[in-house]
Each structure stands twice: as structure tokens, then as C-alpha cells.
Image 1 (cartoon, rainbow, N blue to C red):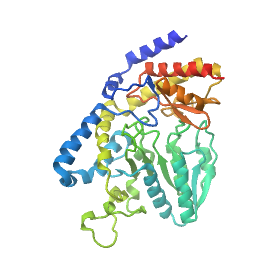
Image 2: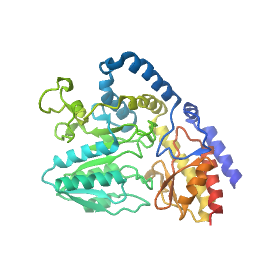
Image 3: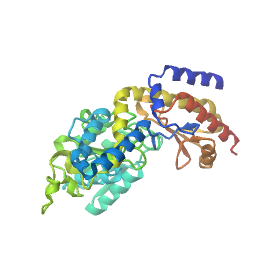
Image 4: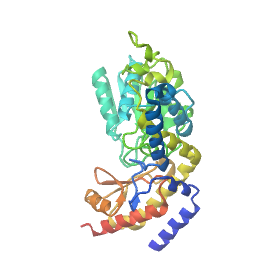
Length: 406
């Protein structure tokens, strides 16, 4: 069967319309990099862009670069990201800060905009930052957190949201793709339920942006945040992004009032006056150098097309499931991700007691997955940089090591 699976991987690679994009990435010494859902690989053009920026724009123009266009990057890159990956019309997305900081800004603005409502709904298996930030805001504002108990194998369901929200709910916060299992939430239906109760919705897009088609405007999303270092290949600590629906601009006021979010930043006058539109989400000086990779990555994603990326992502994760069923299930490994394609994001989580002890041997063998407690290995092939043969090689090593583990 292994030969048949290898032949299938070879055939899938030969038929892959996105295969040429793999040559655009910096070569890696890894046998199989399966952690694109945590940190994407760098593009060759990213190195060239950074070198050109340092020598030409920064070194050549010096402080004049701010008036050459740097000051507008948070909005121009935000609009580009919105068009390429978010389904968001211009003027609603900014690139800035970290996911945590932007999550705080948006969540705090949302609950302050609903002062007569005292509840925030979230789920118990969301990413820690999301839970921690809302715990802090609840303590600051005297709010009640309403916890939806979610199965780590799946994620939040519309029926659970309907049972949790009421006329006292100010905000609901969930992840589009669950970080642990890869569960793909029903965003439009959950939005409909929340809005019917008069609540605002905030979505974490970290594990879906650049991998799964997103239609923020069409779905009626109020607020969203996400990072750019996973499927967008922005690099370690790359800046995050925030989306604020146009109809809410002017109503919601984010709490970190810095000079870059001021109506006239360089007047430096007394008192804070928020800038119009999404620019009001900015606080401090934009991380310009860290934004450089986004130019190349968004160009590549636009060329490939998010629908083609999603189609390959599903083929890759289908192949992971087939390899897991054939090789790993007999070794006691359990798949804890959705098997239904429409409910699966871009990664598959495998679980078996003792997997943590396999991390170092896997890395020593050149196979790099991700680990999440308890006992979960996340297999996250990135469609633009990962081949089917690479997935085959990585899971073959995992099979061999798991078979030797007592």
C-alpha cells in the first residue's frame, strides 16, 4: 500500500497547478515542513525586498520615507489584504500591532459601544490570547463571561451560540478556524444569530487567512483580527491586521489613543481627536520594516487565487487523513479534526498519548510538525509551499517513530 500511496502523491504533484509556486520559497533543509499553519516559510523575493528597502528606501530616503508613503502602508496594505484574502472592500482593514493588541482594541471598543449590555460570549477551547484578553476586559468593565463548552475535536456550533446569547449580550468572539482541531465555523449563521440578539461579532482569522476563503463583507462580520506570519508568510512576529465594518466606524472607539490614530497626527496638538475611518484603529508608529514581506506575499496570493489555494489545501489534508488511516490508526493514533471538507480548515490534528516525546526525534529526522497539548500533533501543509510527496515523507517518518514508541 505504501507504494500506492507514494504513487498517488507523485500523481497529485504532477497534476498540481500551484506546484510552480514552491520554487519561489527559500530552500529548506527540512525533509518535511508541516507547520505552515504556525509559521510560513519565507519567499526568495522577501529577502530581495528587505535588502532593497534597507539599502534604497531606508538608507537612501531616510526620514523622508515617511512622506514617500510609509505613513499610508497600514491602510494601503490593509486594503490590499482585504481585496486578496478577506473579502473586504477598501477602507475597513488596517495592518498594525500584534493580534493580541488589536484583539484588545476591538473587543474593548465593542463592549464600550454596548454600555447597557453586560455579557460577552466565547468558547472554552479558543486560542489562549482570545480568552485571556476577554478575561481582562471583563475585569476592567465589570462584565460577565458566558462560556460555551466546545469539543476540542470540533468547535463552536450555531445551536450553542443561540442558546448562549440574549438581550444582555454585547459581544461574541470565536475563531473562524479552531487552532487545535481545524474546525471551520459557520460564520454567516453565527453572525445572524448574534445580530438577532443585538450583539456585535468579533472573529479571529489567524488560522484561516491565506488558507480559507473569507468574505467579511458578505457575511456581515462586525470586527475581525488576524496575523500575517502563518499562511501569509510574513515572518516571525509579523504585524497583525484588524477589520472594522464601515457602518460601525465612528461609533466604535478603540481605547489605545496614540498619535497615529489622531485626525492630524503631525499637528501634535492638545486633546485626542480620532481619525475618520479605519485609521482610528492605529495607535503608535507603524512597524514599517516588518510590513515589507507582505507586499510580496499578497502579490503571490493574488496570483495564485484563494480558491485555488483552498482546493489544494483540501487535497493536502485529505491525503493526510488517508495516510493517517492507513499507517497511524493501527498504531493507536486518532484523528481529532473534522473529516467533512466544508468543516475543515487547513490543518489536521493527530492525537496519541506520548506524542510529545516524538517531537525531538521528528525534528532530528528533518520532519517539523506542530505540537499542542494534550498529545496533539498538528499537520499543517501550506498549499503554496508544500508538495504531496513532502507530506508523504513526513508522515512516513512519523509512522516509523510511532511504531517504535513503547
